[in-house]
Image 1 (cartoon, rainbow, N blue to C red):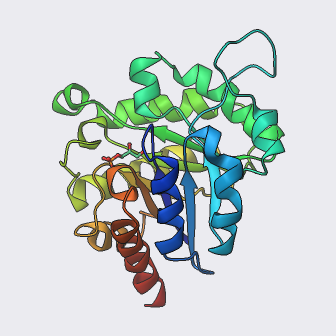
Image 2 (cartoon, rainbow, N blue to C red):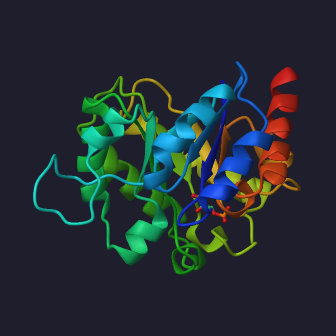
Length: 248
Ligand code: 13P
């Protein structure tokens, strides 16, 4: 399976920083797909720069509504107008600060799919849930609630992002990440959720220093990177780690 290295810039990067990033960044390759989700006002400026490196751009969110009086929201049609390729759905920061539920994510996932935008559905447990041994239960619930009634052939990616590892510098150990990814793949099969096995990315303090050991795990099909995606040098080094693994 190909590897996907996805940058989630969140509410970071000035236009100047974003421009410089694309000058320096390592390109996508046949085996390693590089995707970047900047802040939405920059899409049109960054698209041609990304294209030069075979990098696809995406959104960090969309509205669950098609159009209308929803101040501050971005519609899926806007993503299409800008030739965007993917959209993050249900990132834990949106679940936490905007109270997004998996049921709401399902609406967004369906809208993406109907409009040929690849959703990256983000799931993961909090520290309390992990401490009380609820990790597998939480992942299963998020998968079922977010993917029920999604077409079996849907083109979708899953991102496992343990909430306690996001922006904390604390990464899941290789075995913690591997067992979560195995569980995700098992639930998808057992619940007959998607007939085509989706790539499952790991996210949560991925850095140049730990990218290779995480991505050498067969069930980890790439990385969703926050902090370390802001500097072209660090992100390029993660991309090169994936390229080196793809060669073996
Ligand atoms: P960090 O890589 O900064 O931990 O963020 C991960 C993340 O939230 C990616 O979506």
